[in-house]
Length: 208
DNA sequence: GCCAACGTTGGC
DNA sequence: GCCAACGTTGGC
Image 1 (cartoon, rainbow, N blue to C red):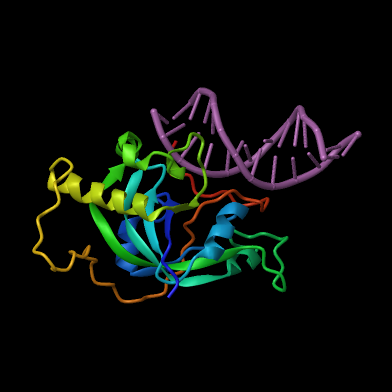
Image 2: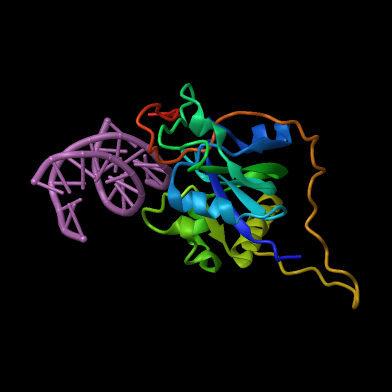
């Protein structure tokens, strides 16, 4: 089996939050209208792990985990003139935009805020932390992924950089527990924001 | 609300 | 192909 990759996806919680994903169990990730982000979507494989990031939130931060449950396929919203994701230049015989399906994995008890990510030396170089980084779909290394998860656990436990628990020789490494996958109900709800190449339709602004 | 950073568009 | 104008993202 191909090794699983790790990603970070941004969403405005007012548009689509980790809480909504938890409730839905799974969702479609339409609406990405940026070529670089699209290309990353197309690289995704079922089982890839996803950091679910809340942008334009207070505070912005990684709010939980998801996983890829369906690889990339043409984004039909690009063909729908009524959709805010409509792109008249995307033809059905040559779809320009792609989307994936995401499954809920876990909602952090508390999001890991952006300033905490920035302050962590282990996350130096992470795309999200680059000045001016706007990419809504971005790869992260496994090391970065694991570190963010660790930060989430530590913060809620209220302990500083915990020393690893001693483990009996030969004992299996503890697995990060994932909450049971909620029932797979298909939802169709625009949420991923991205640069519009389509002339109409503004993404929902969440505040100002 | 401000604005830096970035992507896209279109005139030339 | 250049690049100015414009629109968007998203932290602050």
